[in-house]
Length: 291
Length: 269
Ligand SMILES: Nc1ncnc2c1ncn2[C@@H]1O[C@H](COP(=O)(O)OP(=O)(O)OP(=O)(O)O)[C@@H](O)[C@H]1O
Ligand SMILES: [Mg+2]
Image (cartoon, rainbow over all chains, first blue to last red; front, side, top):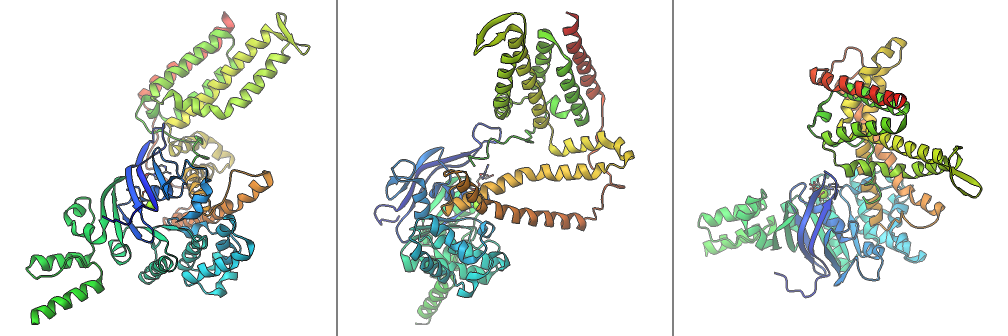
C-alpha cells in the first residue's frame, strides 16, 4: 500500500463498546487498524451503523477506546503528557449535520469559538476566522449575521469554517455533504480539497458516496459492521468489485461501465473512476482503435 | 457520553417475563399498594416479608440486580443523611453510647435501619415498574386509571399525551445533548473545569443549540400530529387495548393478600 513512511495519525486494534455493562451493550468497532499519512485525503466508506462516526470520534479523543490505541505523530493520545484538548485542536472533527451546533449571535463569533479555545493570541483570531471563511467561500458580509438566519448550506459552511479556523493538521469530516443538493456537495468537496492543497493537512472524509470518494480521495478504507473490510488506493479498492458487492457496496458507476466494456473485449484501463478520467481513457482507446 | 450515562430515569428494559407482561394498570396498583404496605408495616417480620416479595418480583422479572442497585446510587446521600439524623435524635430507653452529648439508643438504631430498608424498597419497586413497563404502556395505564377524573373536567387525555411525549423525548434529548457536547468539545469547549461561573458560561454553547433543536422538534411534531388529524382525546380509540385477564388476577389477588399479611404480621407478633 502506501509507503509514505510514518503515519501522522494511526489506530491500532481499536475497539469500542457502547453501553458496557448494560443490556444495551454493543461493540461498534472492533480491532480497527487505520492510518492517515501526511497530506493525503483518506476516504472512509461503509453502511449506516458500520461504525464510521464512532471511529471518527476516536481520532480526536472524544471517545476513549475499550482497547487498542490511537497514535498521533507516533504518540498514544491517551498516554503522553500532552492534554487531550491539544489533540482536539490538532485533529479537527466536523460532525454529521454540524449546523446544529451553531450557537453564537454572529457567524464571526461562532467561527472564532474554536480558535479562541485553542489559545491563539487575540490579534491572530481575526485573520484565522476570515481565512477560514475564505476556504468555504463565505462572503465577508455574512460575518455579522446571525447563524440562525442563514440557509442550510450556508450554516453547514459556517460549521466547517469553525473547525478549519483552528487549522487542524488532520481534518476529519463526518458526512459533510449529507442533505445538500448536488451543487452544494460539489462545492463543499472542492473547499475541502482547497484546504488540503493550501495547508498540506490530511483529510479524513467519511461518506456514503462512492462517487465522492472517487472524486476526492487518495486512499479508501471500507468499513463493514465495525471491522475494516478493505483498504488501499482508490484504484485497488474499486477493482475489488466482488468484495465490494459482498458487503453490499458498489464501485462508482464509471468504473462499473469501464469494467463492463473490458469484459466485452474492449481494451480499456478499468482504473479510471471519475467521469473526466473515463472520458480521457475512452478517447485514448478510440484513438488507438482508429490508428 | 460519560456525563450522562448514569441516568436511568424512565428507562425501560424490554423483556417477556411475567412481570413485563402484567397489565400496566395492575402493576401500578400493585406498586401503590406495596408502597402503602411499606408505610403501614411494622417490625422486623413486616419488613422481611416485604423484602421477600420484592426479591421474588425482581428475580421473576429477569432484571439484573446490578441494574436495580445502580438506580439506587443517586439516593445514597439522602438515605445516609436521614439515617444519621435518626440515630442521633431518636430518644429511647436502651442507651448504647454517647457522641458529643447525644445519646445513641437501640431504638434510634433500629428505626434508622428500618427507614433505610423502607426507602430502598420503595425506590426499588418503582424502578422495577419503570424498568419492566414501556413508557407508552405506563401513560396509557395512567390515563385509564385517571379516567374517572374526566367527570371533574380534568383534561386527563391531554395530560397523558403530554406525559407520553415528554417521556418519549427524554432519550432523544439525552442523545442530542451528548452529540452537541461532543461537537463543542471538538472545538475545544471545556465543560468540566473552572469555577462555577466559568462552568455556567461553558453551558451556553450546549444550551442554545439544545433549545433551538427542541423547539424545532416540537414544531415538527405538532405539524406531524395535525397532518394526521389529531384533535385531542374525544372519540379516539387505542390500537393496543389494555385488558385485565386471568393471569393478571392470578398475580394481583395473592399479592394484595400478601401485602395485607405484611401489614398485619408486625402488629400481631
Ligand atoms: N451513543 C451511542 N450509544 C449506543 N450505541 C451507539 C451510540 N452511537 C452509535 N451507537 C451504535 O454503534 C454502531 C455504530 O454507529 P456509528 O454512529 O459509528 O455508525 P455510522 O457508520 O456512523 O452510521 P451512519 O452512516 O448512520 O452515520 C451503531 O450500531 C449504533 O447503533
Ligand atoms: Mg455516522
